[in-house]
Length: 435
Length: 200
Image (cartoon, chains in turn green, blue):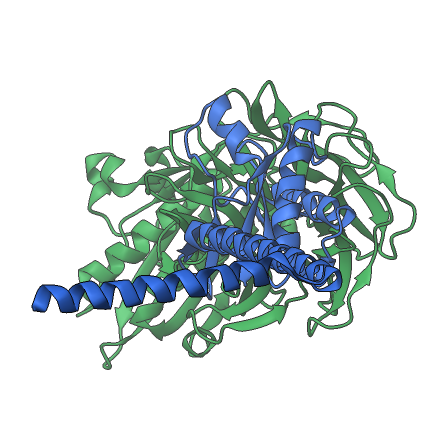
């Protein structure tokens, strides 16, 4: 994967403003948030560039911008007839004529194939139609196989210009696909395309988690008749048994910096939260209670760990220091709260709580205040996982029938299914950005 | 002529019999007292020995029958994607748990006693206790719950004298339901500790 990305270079052609000077600054999760209309004129295929390559990039960018939730995307077929066929060519855009399309922002682009047909360069420019100014322009060069990746980078750049933080369209989602009795690990891009089976061993493979560098996926598998922790490369090769003491080895969470891993381990006849070194060795028990402990999640500052414990009866969310000290119960509402996920900004912990027999996704602040329910009355909603920008939460939901991976804004708005599958999808985990 | 001969032979034979029989009868009627006691003792011991042998034979047969009953009860089971093969025996019964609980219920203690009795009879058998949950919980917490359920059963067996090195545990969480239906009945069947034989 990395080898493929390396040849991709980008040049900042010109950038008249930096993001801090941008006209708009959007908070997707603000209650007053209104989507910004962005117009995407037809992109130009320079000279002999195959039109399907340009169409693919155009579609991917436009889909990404829609999925981001920040934009109301106006594609060229919906423009007034005079503008429909007009290509918005970077560098020669007459801004005034595009305001008729109803957009406030304009994204123009063109693609040119090099003499080597496998090499292309993609150029885009972003304009503010209201203030009539150029926001950013960039060019990406690389193999034609990387067109989706280039499109994701363009979308992320547009999100950066408009919101002050990069988008997350270059991330991937690892999840479990149930196939009969077996469960296999699978990955997909953030837009749900590019689905790849990672394990194909017919065993029970569950609880995927990304290594901090995004190069491997950790998961628990029953291959050797014990729930052991494994690592695997993104091409499905290099399977490595990583933590395999008798009993549970499950639900790994890498400490920021990647030197330690918190996980569930079977010790003294029950599941405990333990720390192991980055090489899987040297387990240290952190929890000291008579209860069952599950699902550790590090705070982004590496000082605390959220986890599940049933020490006081039904399972609830707790927080402790990295050495197991200062244990504090966080949730007091409901009688089944599990699967905590600490947000990358540190300000919230998402979890799965049971309400009237259904599972719903909630968030709560690490001090126990600000409890908020994000999903409601639509099937079971489980296993929240944050994007690296903290603006989205992936989860599994049975709202449309079979369990599927959904992604929503972190305020619960705009839920959408990741893939078009009919079900059997569980336990999403979102990677770092691959840019 | 021949009639005369036959009569003579018959007379001689009868005479021999008449002379010989009273002699034998006299010998039996006059045994010594000590010889008689020894014979009685020997007879008693022989009878006892025979009874012991008979009992041993019966025991052996019963054991053989039980052994063959145990042997007959064994069914090899292969889980897809999981290394190795285990044996299941209908004589090792499952125990069940209440929702979100992992304590052994009083009605299941009897089942564990029977399982322990079987394991005591076959001291070479090594088993694995599988902890299972119903699907209603969340996956990772169910892994923890299954671990605890399996260990509850293991500890109970240990309290009945089954050494813990003969009993390993594994939590399958909600991954291997006995009955995949989404009913209270199915869920109750799925919240179980199941016993499989790793070696015998």
